[in-house]
Amino acid sequence: MLVLNIFESICFHIRRCGLDDRRLTNAFSKSWNNLKAALALYFAYYNFCRIHTTLRITPAMQSGLSDHVWSIGELVEATHS
Image (cartoon, rainbow, N blue to C red; front, side):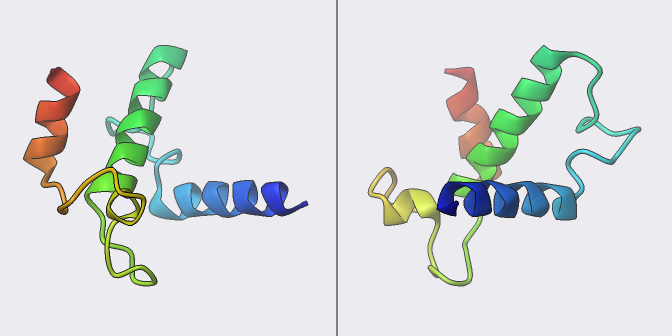
């Protein structure tokens, strides 16, 4: 039951941020590959670039994957390498 609550919380957050209901932007995709890419980019931003109010750091810093808050440029650069 706990896993279902976490999953529902993540889905609610994605809907609230408008990832899936912007029809004419880059976030809307008609193919599975584009949808997967958009979600991967969103989750990378969420975990590496966005400072969370409860943690006061990024989840990547909390888990030891990163030692600083990434900029959008660093995120894009990391996806190209």
